[in-house]
Amino acid sequence: MGIDISSLPSPSYLVDERLLVRNLEVLNSVQERSGAKILLAQKGFSMHSMYPLVGKYLHGVTSSSLFEARLGYEKMGKEVHVYAPAYMDREFDEIMSYSDHIVFNSFDQWNRFKDRVQNAPKKISCGIRVNPEYSELEIPLYDPCYNFSRMGVTLPNFRPEELEGIDGLHFHTMCEQNSDTLERTLKVVEEKFGEYLHGMKWLNFGGGHHITRPDYDLDTLVRCIVYMKEKYDLEIYLEPGEAVALNTGYLVATVLDVMHNGMDIAILDTSAECHMPDVLAMPYRPGIIGAGEPGEHPYTYRLGGMTCLAGDVIGDYSFKEPLKYGDKLVFLDMAHYSMVKNHMFNGVNLPAIASYNEEEGIKVIREFQFEDFSGRLS
Ligand SMILES: *Cc1c(COP(=O)(O)O)cnc(C)c1O
Image (cartoon, rainbow, N blue to C red; front, side, top):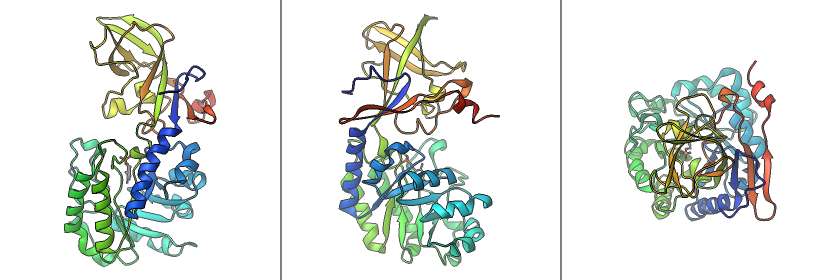
């Protein structure tokens, strides 16, 4: 990682700005080659101390709630787009005050809020989320096109006669995928909704594009964007979350105890449940610097968290040396879907949030206290 972490509190999330800039440059190259506008999906990465940096490259944010919309508006101050499966009456005026684009999940939602949007003091561009019923995902938890999905309007439910005032369509059907999936998805979007695209101003391709992964095919992405842009005379938006922060950060943790019960076990000052919940939800096995698969190196341990949840286990890893109290472990790729999803189950404190750049070195931006725990309860 090339960073001296000895001064970092443990546990900490640490984002390396050099790596974030590298991702932002890749995303910007797509914008420059294709003319698309790329937004940060805050759902995946809301480390707002980085928003000024992100805003140098991207056109703004997309949001899934009032709070995300406000965060993007206040901390980045560029375009704010919002999509939610449904909007609350009492929140809608405030959402409008931050938003440039609002995407509705159904024609009933659009009709419910249409007058309020059209009478708003500023111009807000409205869209409908469509469900093309085509995805290449196997896990229902992450598949917006799964049976009985509530995400977006399917063709049989599409109401062309209610499109007046709608400027764009939005689809989001991908997760961690390459541009070949996008190309096949666009074919279906065109077959089903192409006739309506001619009257639109924009099309939003959603997120799930793994654009900053080393094997990602950028040429196909650019070709897809340019094709849709020119054929239908549209502004194209993409809103990746994960791709912005992919491989830009770490979770640094410390060994608190080592024990034996049929196998060697190490207990860490972090938690899968609280600090890396996708390890249990996806599920997946995060990489650790210097560690291998079980049995690959001489000393294999099951790494567990500090909550009382029996299944708070990160995985089995092997090391060249035995683990001992105080050893630091560095988990890889912990910037996205970690800070935004963590919580204080069991009263376990949150990791500190830190960044690194060459001029300033490590900056600890935020540490959490008892009041952060008690403040969200009563
Ligand atoms: C989750 C989500 C995104 C971002 O997805 P990533 O997989 O992080 O790129 C974008 N748009 C919508 C509507 C989403 O729900």
